[in-house]
Image (cartoon, rainbow, N blue to C red; front, side, top):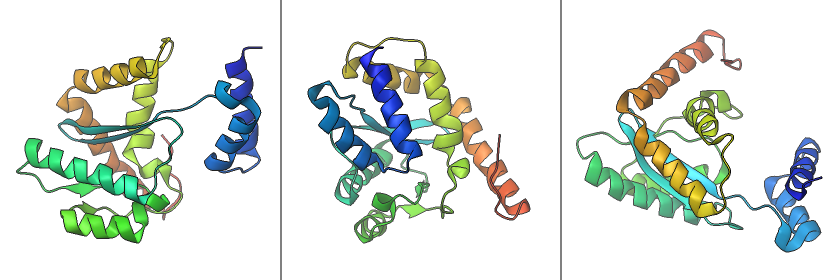
Length: 190
């Protein structure tokens, strides 16, 4: 069996057992050492006109409040340059780096407002129900030799999609939030 398939099976098993991503990564590193699968984490900030900022986190790193604040500072500078006339509202989930005191202070300092996000509700996060599934479809079936190849493919996909594409994703947020209200907070499927 291919080593990558074995590692994916181990990841799937540990996830089903309730292990956190950090615990899984530690186990994988202990078992597979240098042969361990590493993931490059991707953060994409987008609006109805397109992708505003992308941030790739290098292998072996995790997102903490300080790193997230650094990403927000880069985002604010980029927003100032490319969307100067718009109000900046961030919609992110309730992960610890997004809700820490350090992050909240930085959001206030940067003048970035946030939309509230109910806990355990990936169905209301546009990156989960719209952006990443479409990106995964685009990347599916391709073989990338290096992380740089993956990054270039992601950036190419971001550039190739039109403002109408991204506006459609933002419109879906409105519909999903309305359904969530109508269904008294129940999970919103497709």
